Image (cartoon, rainbow, N blue to C red; front, side):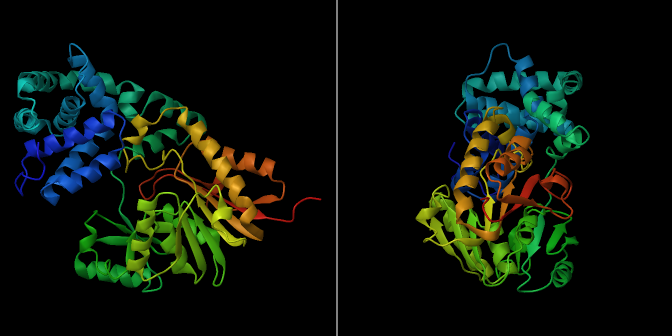
Length: 434
């Protein structure tokens, strides 16, 4: 199907076809971000891209349910990833809107034609009709299993239950909900209270979450936000907004933002203090976004494309008063924004991330000044990447001290109605032992 030639007001069939291609690519191991980025580039209209994206999110959030249902209804496994993606998207839509079953089935069959699978029309129709008839029996049976109920792989469920005996279920359920849209008000331009008044005048309901964070009652396009283009506000999760204040940056300090792209925390640091900031990231394309975000905010930093495990290549022989290490991780705390992650990750991946995180911590520690502070941050909920990582680091570096974080018991934030999942640990460097 050519996404550039469909009508400006896409039909459900066109949206199904677009979603099928993206979900199919995820099933083949590609990230949802990559697939959606391609969809937005190729789609004839924002409406088609948005409709296709919604179907992708629904299918992948409900994957633990609809994939099992599909497996029970097929006589043999379906090898074609795009066709399987179409059925998964249609299953999720049928489960969410059973009253629209006739339209959903008809449009999914039409989508098969748009995708060049005319011979599969009968299969798509038969499987969807069968699911429509049996879903009131099938879905409760599948939801009786933990994978069906919580829409996560069993190893993931088991890991959270072991780590958080009281909170694991709430964390899993929150990870299946639509994420909140939270804004960060640029305190250099105006206080959060003044921006809330602007939102009220614009007819956008919102409320303060504390400091510069503002929660919108309903998500909206950034183009609708007053002052967004002028740099008065940024979109940033409330949990992510904890990083910059925790680092305790002050005017005149030399600051390193390691693994900085796309620059949300970079901008926040510069909003809080007039410091000499170096932002480093290994991905050249993503590093460009740091500059774009800072330009919109009217801020500036030195941006370097480099390897943070080799700080001598960009530190110029000097140390830093503050370092923010936003370490690469499993991203297990942000899966409601990236629902493909839970199905693409494997249990062994956390150990791989933990090794890379330890390497970065050990590499950056020498360029932190004595009495300086390093904030270790992840968007993970797995202890191996978080508290376990920090305990191992403290054993390797007796000159390091873990500082208390007010309001953050153990440094872990689990997904909630207001925040994604994050972990923070603030380390300070004392004199090396003699």
